[in-house]
Length: 396
Image (cartoon, rainbow, N blue to C red; front, side, top):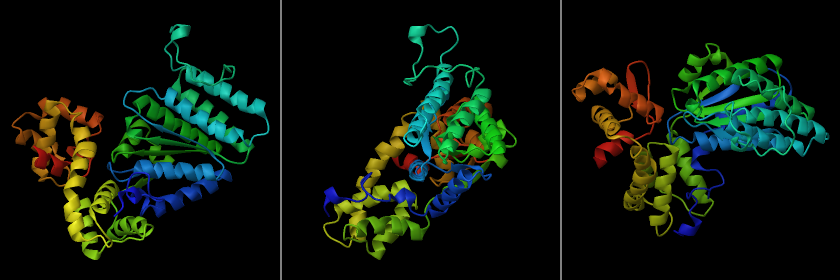
């Protein structure tokens, strides 16, 4: 098969495997856009799931939907211990520019941009010299007195209100999409929840769509007890067999090719239905197959190539971030689960390593912070990366 035409190469497909089987989420967001734009109450959205299930790609699709509907849309990726003001300012700056082309009052745009600039400039600590302060790249005068108190909760409410009212001027709304939401600092999570609560009461057209690891709902709940009423939670999981087959067949058929049934059986077994793996194995099988239909022998020949790429780019890059003590903890988890994607009791990890549980807490907490594991429930721990245990057993 022609590798130049490989429909499974990143960015090659019109609808990548990560979006197969996501019609429910796409349809739900379309309803949210319509309801909020009409001033009706609606909750923001939170997407949760393991790594490799396509949350980031789905966020990109939802952003495109918002922009197609005439909304201003901005997307950020949260990072551990990073300040929220800078990425949020950049995202909302982009959203305001989306609205500016339709707004008939340039001075109103400048007014809101001035408030945004004041909010952004508060990211520099008090006492910072002028020449050392971060500049947000917003070429309008600062408008002091709104969203610049230094209290992130107060400032978010005021900023979101300003931006949402600007969207109301042109009959649309604002969509703020936050990837890796569990990595926000605790005070920023609390402020975000409070702002969403205030705006839902006022029914202004601003929607937050967060995506993160399975423990994100617990992070939000620990921040504000009412967070469960603020968001609609949607678990993004592996694809079922029908959707996984569609994710392989549809791109191939656009290139006048197909897979036979045995190949599809083997691909599902190897990928487990996880979209990232479906794409990796599909790409390798396409490159290995001389003709269509792609058969099980092609998949078997291609599998080592796909697994080598996953070992380096998907598994290895994450394993390399772990310290020796953390790697020991990860290997113990893999051995206790026999490489399966199941949670394990933290007490069993300690027993397996013949260590006191308290002595392993620093390694476990660091792995949690790095996003390599998550707490499935109290006293349990699980990998955030599908098939990670299998990889560890095969490579160590």
